[in-house]
View 1 (cartoon, rainbow, N blue to C red):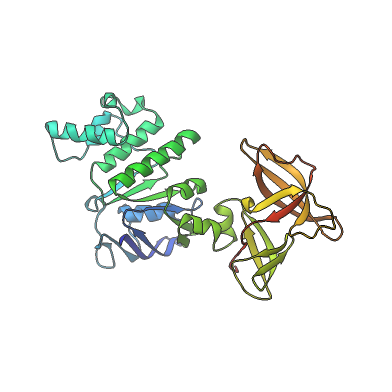
View 2: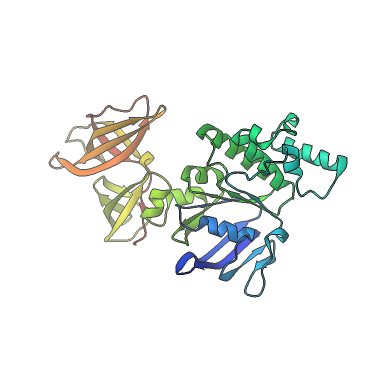
Length: 356
């Protein structure tokens, strides 16, 4: 069952199209991430869902209730949708307890107990109840903002890049904490971000936006392995993209003969491999009959447990550089040094990209 349905949502600001014919279904209880570069329309789409802005055309429904169509628009305060902005937007003149309890209909002891329950749910110690927002760390402020949003028992939670201002380590921990809390509460969630690693780790449904359009949506692993086009492939991570000739389920390219996931015959196409699909071994004799090709390591970017290598392919016939450089991920401890002669082979299937 889908909690949220967007159908043909469009929005323009003068001559500028912010959203164009966007349709998306968000399953109940899921975590959907809308990802895209700056100016792609993702934040505009989130504001449409929240009720802060309204589309020029299209309709939107939540749990079977129409929120926007051609005849009426439900205002934001009547939608029962939680919203956590990038900076948390806490009231600076209110304590933590007052921020969390803002908007609760209950009073007295019942309200205090509900605030204490919400603080516990987001892992905030009860001793913080009387602190002011400026006395909290960035992660603590985001947890207060999340507790305040959860206090309204929302039907849908919207997160607008809530982790972007946090340090790298804290960002990952907060992401895991928020994902767990929302899953335990059974709240359907939409996160907007421009960070592809954040999107891939948080989502169970990923929606990629570009130039106001929804380019592709689906399970994060499916989009990572089978992106619609080269731009999407490169946005979601490092990728090796090269021309090839497709014949009987195989791609013939600079890396040799590689199996593909598209069986178009005698067709020129662009194929994609992720760097982790490339494997390096010590250079083999020219006479060796093995799949793959020879290469030379030209750069070595060590980052601890992993190492990203740049290798330059060589023509199997002449041994000269082919001019094509590729990124390969290797174990940090055993990565060959720059200048090493290596043999490059592939694992898995190459993905055939759609024609532009």
